[in-house]
Length: 154
Image 1 (cartoon, rainbow, N blue to C red):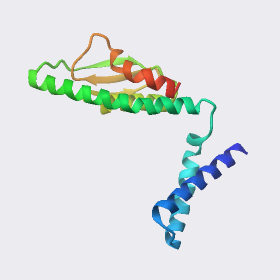
Image 2 (image 1 turned 180 degrees about the horizontal axis):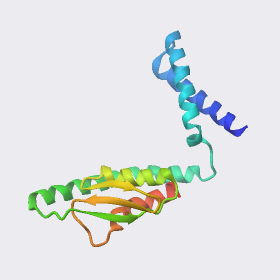
Image 3 (image 1 turned 90 degrees about the horizontal axis):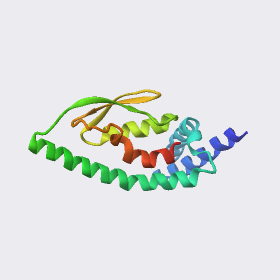
């Protein structure tokens, strides 16, 4: 019963947003209804309420400025490496602290979208990351991201 309520709630919100953003013509209402049905069945589990949701959402909001900061710092480091020519590329194996797919995906994407690093492969217990400059402490690649991500997706 809870799944039906969740699907109906997500459907209602999606359809309402569609109507507000697109208009009130009959064709748009039909297209919005079809799109809302598809989206609600695919994503209702993401919108179900959990008592930890508010705290996790606040950590997600705090993660956004940190990620922007990490992006800027990484750009500066890569520019410095280009100018000085001091690069030492390599592939490292980093332990994956996440049990959920969402946490693993968020961590892998955060690493990949930051200049100078690229996640090559993810596994249940490890990530393989290509770095433009190898570090002696492999875990330092994920430490900043993990401070937030482990609280969002435990």
